[in-house]
Length: 261
Image (tube, rainbow, N blue to C red; front, side, top):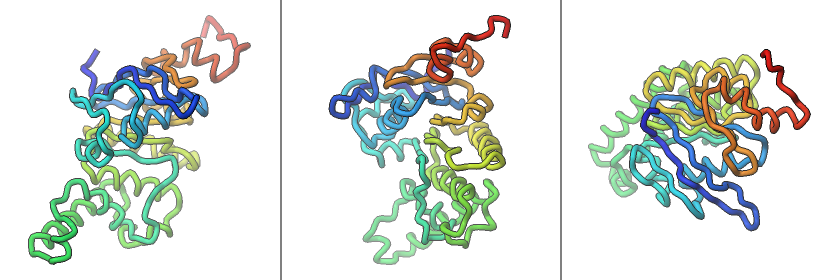
């Protein structure tokens, strides 16, 4: 097996008496798409938050690029090369599309508040560089025609892609996508799947939480399955589709797979 790019080791997280993440260990290989699936309440988003540093674990470790990042603050993890999107878009709706993507460059800038207030010449050059890089990302994702539009005026599907663009502006090597297809129609979901594949092919490893099983099986190199906070299966999509515990949680106790299928 290829060396792990991201690895969780025996992660635990409690919320009161609820063991939301229970002894979860799994690995993500570099330059792949790994899907994290499971029923509602399985602990998927909590696991994402542990990886992104939004909440600390009560036990276990997270390693990224061969280095422990357990307990790091979210901004430090972002600077290390991990970006994320959310179940609901979190754009600055009154800002333009270009401005939203420029915000994503913040972890890569040198200008602080004081330098910006003093309006120093080198801050002008940096601002121009940020704008040029943000515009290049919009062009790459087919959004350049929306650059000057207010984000609130875009349809939901386009807002989702803008959020991808903002995440990519941080120059991540790992992108965490939390239910990216939520709220999208069939056409938009197909566009999304093609976009995620393009992102992977350009050297950005992806970890995706998703309920759309068609999307998961079409784009994933590996799949990790959670149920009630525990990992119950891990492997390639075709293997996961036939795993008895996965069939049980998705199709019920009485489902029997055709042995000839």
